[in-house]
Image 1 (cartoon, rainbow, N blue to C red):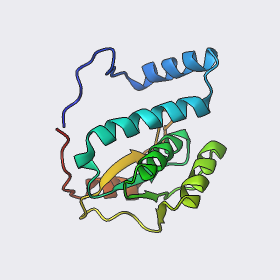
Image 2: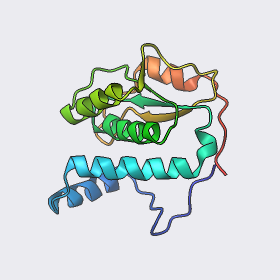
Image 3: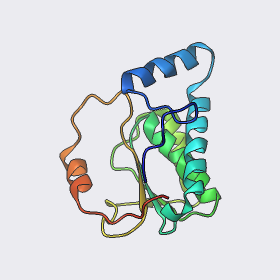
Image 4: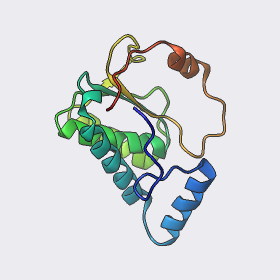
Length: 156
């Protein structure tokens, strides 16, 4: 899988540019809830169009803030489209919107893992741990998990 070319449909921005974009959207009246849904649905559409990534299932790594909520929207929509989805939430959820999305995901039957996902499997991981507001170093156990070898299919 390669990065898309930068054009009107595929804009790659820095974290500071993304913060500016979000603040501008919020100043125009877009809510965090609406932006979270828009992001999650767009990600789901991309993944469904690259379905070979999803054939072995999906694990969404859910963080404590709104980035975790974005991941939960993707999880919900993939699950509702028939994809085998599970969640791993190793941190206490801090944002009420993210808590609501997690509660709903569990209520519709998405499995919540009680321990770290198996790195030897071929399921596709969606990292939704840390967003633009992350300032602390990556927790050691998460860094170690990401360093473990994985065999993943590539999108065409």
